[in-house]
Image 1 (cartoon, rainbow, N blue to C red):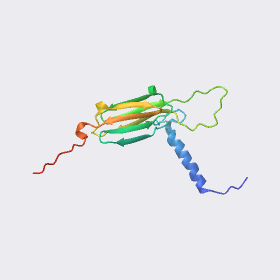
Image 2: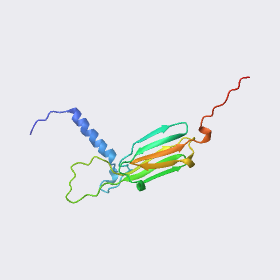
Image 3: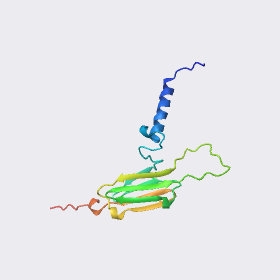
Image 4: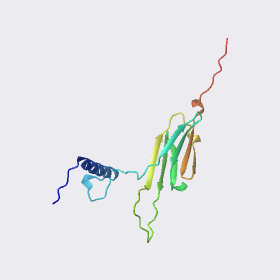
Length: 151
């Protein structure tokens, strides 16, 4: 039997790794072996940039290797939802993968919209793996300049 020096940081790292795996793939303790999940976890989440001008809010979402037909954008009751799926390549005969680090699968992103957004005029454009959403502000939200008269 070899003597191994105790490293408390290695134990913390091992515990952190186990916790991360448990969070990423939860299963109910009462249903062990039945393959049931307690909750659904997104396989990946696309990143977004959100900006604002006087006229509109803009959302830019990175969706690399996602086909336009696999993306759905909805606006309902003040909530914008972007959902879709990035499909994994099918395994080819004679091809071995040594490492797969990119994430695949379904995703859903939801955003609560400010009251100032005109939901009926929301537009979406998709090109080169980037989804551009334009959320125009309603007329009441746009600043108005008032002329000050000198008496």
